[in-house]
Length: 310
Length: 222
Image (spheres, helix red, strand yellow):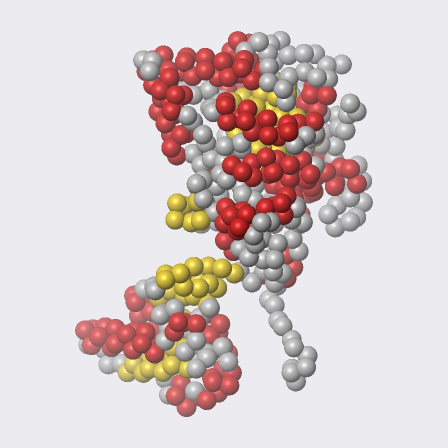
């Protein structure tokens, strides 16, 4: 399959390998060492690293600058970009800024509502939505033009991703929604954290029936649980999250000091099960403030060493 | 209608202090219907102000009037004799009425007695809900008659976002997810296939973003 961009992630997927990505959240300050250190912990075990964009609407060092730090350190960043904070001028401008540093992966998101964060009194922008951001970057890349129609000198060369949540409501449009993102031009998907594997596989089957899995690479999103408390919090408090009772019961069933270990084990088992599933092209491991555990998970799940690309 | 909410009395008092002749001016249109700025509310606010001045031992006169429409010059001109003797006007019409009042009586201070909130309707007695933000390019034909611009917290045109849970918005269990409503409605209309049509990038120049708007109907404008 021909390469659309110089993205290492794209190369990995098109070579038929199972890709591994993970993510790092930037610090709440201007010291770049924190993000560089997190990235160094996982760099040999993943193919690309997402940098979150002011996640949960809490103001942080920006995703673009963090990606540049990673790129300069020789790593492969995935720039997350939300439509909450920037209009179409700023979005296109930041895409070009990222492209000027040869950042080759973009994840298009709408972003959590600002009421969750530290600027609840702020405006939100949402000039475009996440699907329209996918269209925008594909237009810039493939047509070499701005939204306004003018030509771009040295267009961005970005592998375009988006999120998908197989568990959010209403379920009946979960697959049509994926179809819509594919029609908008998305090339890879990183899913919401999967705890309900049966439901995820059902979603995948329906997507396969519609022929979507031949058009988009799905990276299954997984988060290791640190404790029974975290499992319950995610089950009850995080919008769009599906944590089945048996998952909570399993982690709650071991002594507190063993729960983190159990959570890692559960994550590894999930990867092992999903590795054989048709249409799963890799894994996106979201170890929230627990990046140091990513190497262990990747190794134990049989995804290490990472394939070398030419 | 335009829906407003009464300002706290302390804020109104702070705005009119040191004035001897105060006029509370209501409006017979939207703010009467949403029970915040009609004749009845003019009376209540005027009484509250009189009571305050009495308790403070301040000599002040509080007058009352309700215009047919404060957003209409025709009625403002007719109100000139009523308004001019006063030192200050507390308008409890919407922000439009308050501004038209200030424009008409350019040497008199006019302050708002309500906070104007949105364009909406009554769900039941005493409960009003937003329905329109006047974006200038109506999308309702494409979304089953439910507006994602005014009713989605992220005005997502290709929703729902990942925060939709059991029909509710991620910002509050009291807020319906607009996209859940749109999907339910498209289904009821037998049009769920329309969901998959990508909504194109919107031209927001007809919205607030394009600057203050004006409509001219050529055949009647002079």
